[in-house]
Amino acid sequence: MPELPEVETTKQGIKPHLEGQIINAIIVRNPKLRLPVPFNMDKLCSGKKITAISRRAKYILLHLSQGYVLIHLGMSGHLRIVPSNTEPTKHDHIDLILTNGLSLRYCDPRRFGLFVYINDNPHQHSLLAHLGPEPLSKDFTSDYLYRKTRNKNISIKSLIMNNQVVVGVGNIYATESLFLVGIHPQTPAKKLTERACNSLTIQIKQILKSAIDAGGTTLRDFYTFDGKPGYFSVALKVYGRKKQPCFQCNELIETIVIAGRHSAFCPQCQPYE
DNA sequence: CTCAGATCCTGTGCGC
DNA sequence: TGCGCACAGGATCTGA
Image: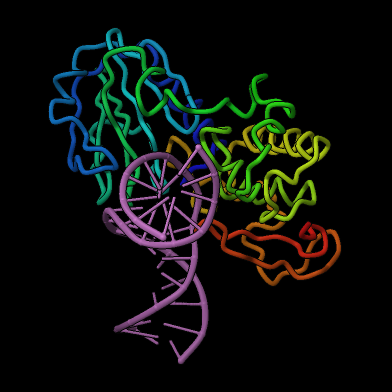
């Protein structure tokens, strides 16, 4: 389900319900995620206090009085805060039960997400250690992106979706930001000028920020932390608009497959080369 | 080293 | 209405 804005919105939503609370127990109904949920998850976490909640890339990190819980939502995961006695549905794989009568419930139909315990500095953990800069941070600059594009034959779309280059830019926002700067998604990264990298960097930051400000409602089936459906409020200009007229020039939007992902673009506004 | 493609899994929505 | 197929928001691994 999530792009970065949805993950950030989820983090912000669950934060006030979790911070300062004590974990009473963890129930794992299905441990088979991208990585297996540790068999002793309950023992590792019970009795510990949740001291803080943070986000790195599309990972959500619960800081415990000792250790951390690292959560990723994959393609189809979501987190909700529910009264602990709420009956679980089919894909509610994990409940983190608090002592205050509420639970953090992890649901993930496709099970591409993960839910693991980390003892030490999570940023040195193999899942996080090699991640590129946060797109909204000062470390993600146009100079940086320009340098990363040098000598790279891969498409610019694949490059900005690569977590080692910059995190949090998924298929939707990669597609949209390239439209907004008029760059064909298949353009080899090395062909981008400094000026193009500058526009693209600015646009990525801007679109992510406005989506977060809008409450992360990019996705049709996004549900907020309390289970309310987010309404599809982020206006997407090309993603999901195949064969529909471009808002800028009326040309029909086309799609191509790049590195296995569908990519929508306007052939007129985003000419190749 | 680079890069394209396959892969994990289930649900949805479309055309027939 | 039912069936089969294409496709879906991510990230990692394999092998050319």
